Image 1: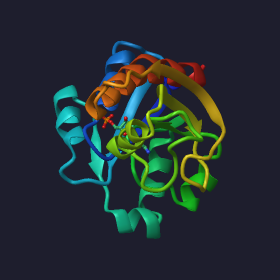
Image 2: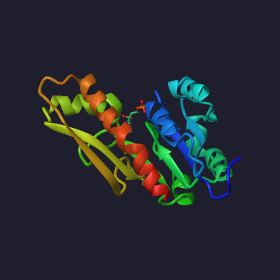
Image 3: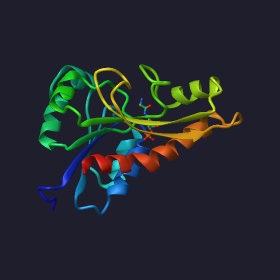
Length: 192
Ligand code: GAR
């Protein structure tokens, strides 16, 4: 039974969902926070398998419906979220959602924004560019979502050091570790 005061979080993901899994584990057993649902735009995303194992409700939606109708908006209104969290979600959030949930949608980006942000900069594309430019550090940015990719107000950043010998996969792994350590805690803080 979920108490009326329980904070409700809705997660969006497009891919593997390791952040989703980590967030679900973090809040497991908490009576004051519930993961109301996971939404995905990819019918075959691994996150759906994870949700099944974790016993979390998940729903696939079609990209066109997302961008061109109020279908997803209506689902969200029904879920009544306190916070909407993009955890590896790759579509731009349409205006109808931004208008309905001002300052309630946050994203995690796998670089130190404003570096390596914008359209086409996601996942391995980011880490490949970081490696190609010989960066000595990279990190994560958790930020509010607005109408432009990766440009909303920054809530939190964390850094990790890179070595010349780090492969793109190792950079991705270092960044994921930062995401696992910081993202659930920041969500928790924002809900308080
Ligand atoms: C994460 O590293 C996240 O920061 C990134 O996608 C990955 C998803 O991993 N997000 C973006 O690149 C958004 N522009 P996961 O599916 O294993 O959680």
